[in-house]
Length: 409
Image (cartoon, rainbow, N blue to C red):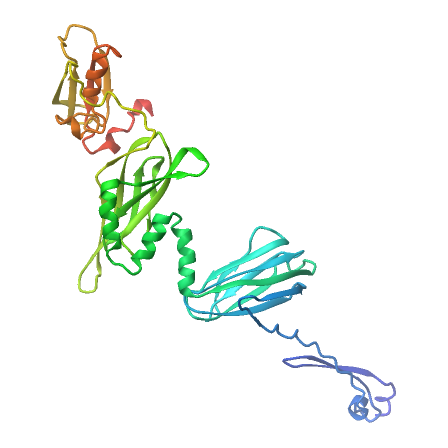
């Protein structure tokens, strides 16, 4: 026993609890008890977590200048109704900020991060989709960044009615669109009256300030309760243009910038889903193509040759068929021969695809471009020599017939 306590020994005991780390340094006692237990010479060291940031409420007119030292976070809250909006900004002064937005259920709704770096405003333009308290957590984009300042400013907190009008001005940028939207909120017949006038006058064509060569055209298409989307085809957007729904109505619209000397045919593709069955469990998809319409801009050049001219000799247009061994079908065509054609005198040859659209039917008034009438007039005025034209009907299978033969691939 005497040998056991001959040397004093230092002993360290580590005690870990849920909130701190306790280190007790003891010296061996001659009786075998740590001296720290007797003379209270133990050393207590606690590593406590940072105190949680207290949230600050955001209200209209709030302006707070703060310094943020990464990795700290600043927390703000705003009480918002369903459909209300907060319009604010964090004006960055030497620190690039991220703002995370959390909904009343604690889930992250969105993250705001503009590309302006460490200087300038980080805009907050947020609309609530449910009522409750929203949390805005501000922190540095880089946790290793140096501390920096910012100013949190709240410009407006808009009630749902105010916010709807603000957003509508962006969705419906022209006065005609906005007025129609606003009227449709309280007048269920507003769209019907508008469409009646639209059928008489066609698309709305408006001047673009400072642009002398182009104009803005707004198209409208009325769907029904089964119409899910509408596409505008024709005009400058060759691949089609998706149309937008006006509020909660069945009216769809699209806007194009069009050269003021343009002339073209346009139409609409309506995509519908019909539902049937006791619970609507039967779904039938349908695509409907509207009739084509013609748009002529104010400076579109005159077309002096599309109408029959008095005194111009008229050729003949005969509908017939030709057997195609390659396509394995009887192909419909229209053959135009000029006035006085005898089959002996040499003529120009014109081959026209989409023959029905270009005058292949007996009634030229149905054609988008009446080729036989145009040829009559051009030949009569000696703009061109005698010409024979072959107008090939599309037959509704362009995908097959427009493919190149193997020798051309």
